[in-house]
Structure formats: structure tokens, C-alpha cells
Image 1: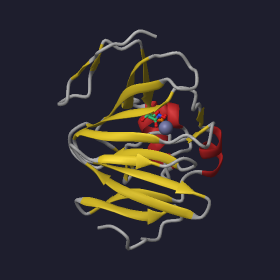
Image 2: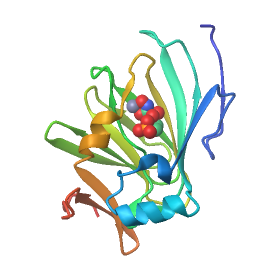
Image 3: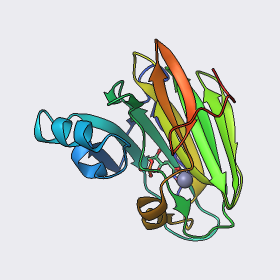
Image 4: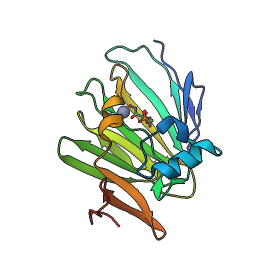
Length: 191
Ligand code: PAN
Ligand code: ZN
């Protein structure tokens, strides 16, 4: 791998050049939102784009670092904010660093019976420790974008989250976000 420099647009999160990208729509996230009916209606209606990931690929080997940006669009499925699928790293002992670029979001994390949520905005540097599952979501009216840097051989385990979900969700109550237990009751942790 040769050294390289990329242009990162801090306002939009666009990374140029990038060598791969992912676009995920509501229909790509079946069963992940609490309100299944709202999810089905959106998916069979306009099926909006929930988020995009732009990445500059490097060899998938120990020591290499992937740099990628995520753009989560503003929106709701029922009362739940647009979010990423969320994952554990397949290599559980690998961590990750996120840097907020634009918009307002949350980072949800959990490991075993511990859960955490971090508010993110432009300039927030968030640390995802090894072993913690992580999911981000947009609680604002504009796209929420952030840069992620993680070991190229980390791998992504989505299956565990698809089966078990996250222990906490972030929903809009009135005009703002509230963190609730996945079962529905408020944690009282964040307003
Ligand atoms: C991020 C995520 C990105 C999209 O780059 O992959 O935000 O989220 P999902 O992968 O959960 O769909 C990261 O954490 N990489 O390891
Ligand atoms: Zn990750």
C-alpha cells in the first residue's frame, strides 16, 4: 500500500476519491426498527435511503487502517430515528475511532449487560473500545456525518445484532431524542 491523501468534505462527509460505497435503504434493514408496520410502509412506499458509507479500501490485513465516512440522512421509522444496522467487529478485540463532522447524532454501544450512549456532533471524537457493539443514528434535521477509522482486518458481525438487537433505542418524544430500553420504558439517562 502506497501513502495517500484524500479530500474529506467536512460539511457533507463526502470522501474523494473513494473506492467502495454502501447505500442502505429502509428495505435493507427489515426487522431492525421497533415499529414493524411503519418500517413496512416506508419500504413499500418510497423506500428512502437511510445511510451511505464511503470508503477508501486498503488490504484486509493486520496493521492496515480503513478510513470511511458515514452519512445518515434525517428521518424516522415510526418514532425511531434513522440509524445504522450496527455490528460487533468479527475480531472482537478491535476498536474504532469516530470523528463527528456535521449534524447531530448518537452513538449507541453495548457489551454483555453494559450499555452506553454518546451524543455526537461536529468535532466529537468518540472511542469504540474493543468488544463493544456500535450503532449510530441521526437525531437532527440535517444529515449526520462522521469519519470512522478501524483496523482493516476487524470484519463486521451483523448477524448477532440482527438476532438480538440493541438493548436501547433512541426515539423522538415531543421535539427531541429520548433513550429508551428496547422494551419501551425510558432509561432516564438522557433527555
Ligand atoms: C462504520 C460502519 C458504518 C455503517 O464504518 O460500518 O457507520 O454502519 P453499519 O456497518 O453498522 O451498517 C464502522 O463502524 N465500521 O467498522
Ligand atoms: Zn465498526
